[in-house]
Structure formats: C-alpha cells, structure tokens
Length: 441
Ligand code: UD1
Image: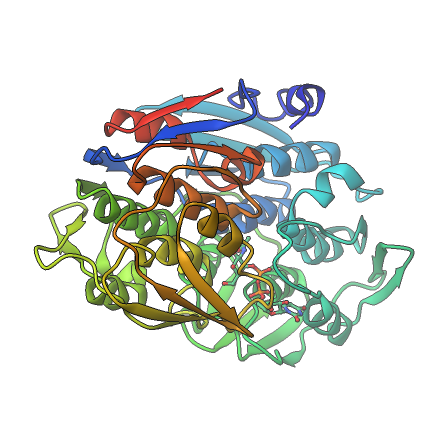
C-alpha cells in the first residue's frame, strides 16, 4: 500500500499503523505453540459498522478487529459524516459510532474499490436517506461477484436503481416498502444488504433462501438490540417487521471462525499446538469434521479450542465448499495449503466462487503438487514444502501462503501484504508471539 493512502486512514482509524516493509519473510519449520487470541470476525464487523448508519443514536461495537478493511470502512463512514470514537482496553478495540448527521453524497471511489463489503452501504443509505450513490464495489478478484441479487431485492422494496458508467445510483424518495424476496442463491452480502434496508422499510419483508452464515445472525442480534423486529435467525427465511426508527445499542462482535480454522491448519502443519481462544467447534460448521479427517485434532477446552496434528499425521481428504453450515469457501485456500503436505490425495472442489484457485500457482512454487480441472483441484501431498517468493492474490490466499510458509523447510518471502492486512488483525505480531520466525522487510 502506498504510504500516503495508509496515512489517509489515520484520522478515521488512529490505531491503524502504516506497516513498514512490503514483504513478509517467514522462516518455516518452527512449531506454533501457545495461546492464540482469536479476533472479532472480519465478516461480521463490516456489516455491523454499516448498520450504525440506520440510526442517529450511538452504537458501540466491542471486539473490533484492527484490520485494514475496518480502517477503510471507517474512512468511508467518516466521509459520509459519521463520527467514530475509538478506545482500547484489555478486552480489545471498541468503537462508538455516531451517525446523527450523514449525507449520502458520492462515495470515495478509491476506498470503495478496496472493499467489496462497501456495497452494504447501498441498503443502509437508501433506508436512512432515501438515496445512495457509489461506485461498483471492488474487493478480491475471485470471481464475477455480481450485485444483481442486491439490486433486484432493493428494487422489489421500491428503490429506483440506475447502473451506468461504473456507478450505482439508487433512490427511494418515498421510502422503502417491505417485500417478499427470494434470493436466487443464499448470498451473504445480499442477505445483509436487504436485512439492513428492511429494518427501516415500512411493513414486513421476507428474505427467502437467505444465507445462514453466523455473521448474519450476529448482525441481526445487533439490529434487534437497536429495536428492530427480526425473526428466523440462523434459518433460510428472515422476517423483518420494519418501519420503526431504531435506537442505539452496544454489541460485541462474534469471534472470527475463519481465523479459528486457519490457525488450526497452521498449528497442524507446523506440528505445534495452539489454544485458540475464544473458539468452539460448532463455529467451524462442516470445516470441523473435514479438519479432523485431515488429521487435525480439535478439542474443546473451557473457553477455546485446542488444535494440533493428530498422532497418525495428516492425510488427504476430499473437500467441497458450500454455503454455511457447509465447508466455508474462505477456508478452502488454507486447507489446500495444509493438504499439500498430507499423505495421499485430496480433491478440493470450489462451488461458490469461480476463480478461487489463484493460490494454486503460488503453492506450486513452494513444491506443492496440485492439478486443477475446472472447479476441482487435486492435491497430491508431498512430505514438505520449500520456501519460495510468492504473492498474495486475495485475503484467504494470503492466509494459505502464510500456513504453507510456516510449514516449509526454509525461508519464504510473501508480497501483496495488503490482502493479509485486510482480513487479519495483527497477524505478524500474533504469529511471532507463538514462536514463528517472521519479519516485515
Ligand atoms: C461474503 C464474505 C466472503 C465469503 C462469501 C461466501 C463478507 C464481507 N465477505 O462475500 O468472505 O467468501 O461471503 O461465504 O462477508 N452473487 C451473485 N450476485 C449477487 C451476489 C452474489 O451472483 O448479487 C454470487 C457471487 O458472485 C458468488 C456467490 O454469489 O459466486 C456468493 O457470494 P456472496 O455470498 O454474496 O459473497 P459476499 O457477500 O461477496
């Protein structure tokens, strides 16, 4: 990231430190040992921060991960007129957001281009201000990632939406109205966008074929604390009785289940042992049994999850990504890194995003034996990966390369670190504290 952009984030997120160095150098082969503090979930905190735009009252979020995506969204909210007050305690980072005076004017294209979740501003701004104007969102280059479900759902609620010249211009001068909406696919972002819009829309909204990811229930719990009436949490049908103004709330962001699964892989590939805290097996959904089949021992302790390699070692297993509670697409790349050193073959099938195998070429540079055919990658385990110079191509690919480098026989150099910083809170520091030889250079 260029330093002037990094510095421009500081007024909105003073805890964000423009990182020194463009590369991460990891000396592999050291076991990760100790307690790993699992941060608040990246995929929960972003919609939760956007939800603060629905009310003029104060909303406080605890357990906020100190990640680049949070810094970028903070800058976006500030440009819209929201005030953010940060505090740090032993329990972590908290923010109180006051959106009593917001203006939905054109949103900064440079910021939106950095984050797909900025599309959630559409539902919240339309509901609160009757208008939203933003560039088409950016984010990871992992597939088409259309926003047609978002647009169709908001149109069903009475919005006029114009898509031209790379911009989205949406209006609902007379306000949004509740609607009966069926999503063609259980899209996480579309479910969240429509949920945010439905809270202030008059009447009842049904979101059918809604995504069931735990981060959506976390958002719904915060909205309920703000006074919204929502039922069907964790199911495929969310019902919102909208139209009542919402107030302030205090909410603690749920733990990051993707970080949990990722670090379980890191513990196993390095033959270490991590106490992942907080952590529960049920948060992993289908990833828990997949990891156990692959030879990752997972044991629930009082306040966390102990993860290590099983005595029998790592073994190949087949994986297919599915919407929650199926195996999370966000764990596909980390698990591929792990299975690269398992005994036997694994077939990894990606069904959510069509271009989510960009980490394969990088893992191959480290000696992984992976053949891709359409949406399936066949991984034939090798005894050990070797260090190499590799590039992070998206946020979860970055996590996979960190896992591979930690398990490799010698030094690796990772570039493209913005992707890592986008999704992971102080990962370099946390890895070093658990014994990794890691440096930004
Ligand atoms: C969210 C997560 C991301 C995760 C993904 C799937 C956040 C900030 N990001 O992304 O980490 O990998 O869920 O679990 O929470 N689609 C359309 N049209 C739409 C919307 C989606 O075709 O209008 C397609 C997408 O191209 C993709 C699939 O639906 O192929 C799933 O996407 P979606 O669940 O919406 O993912 P995101 O919300 O972008």
